[in-house]
Length: 158
Image (cartoon, rainbow, N blue to C red; front, side, top):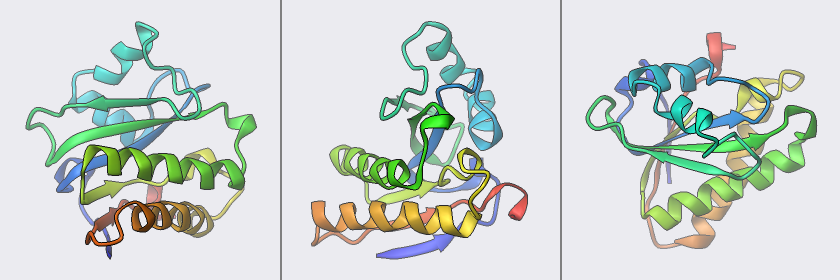
């Protein structure tokens, strides 16, 4: 298992799949997800306006960047309502995200743990709690596979 930190903008991060998160009670994508949505000409915003993806806990949207990003696919995972989030739900969400990545057959993954959804936790704590579950599920699901995980840093380098 190779884990590394991304240094450039989200559109320059190479991976088979880019995993990002969207809370249900956020009316439009923000942060890096907002940037990706903008680059993809509002693909996620259109899904939201058509009520096909609202960010409910565990819901997923798979987007094709069609060469606009270095990532081959973008997986957006719903966080649910922020008031319902806890470190336990974060850990469960990490399993769900890993299970989806395994199902898609991806080995090179880039992601931004959902830092903004946990403003009272340190970014280091959110990162570790998420990675613990995510990596454990990858290893359990495909113990013989070598994965590469690239982590995007917290917003503003916090």
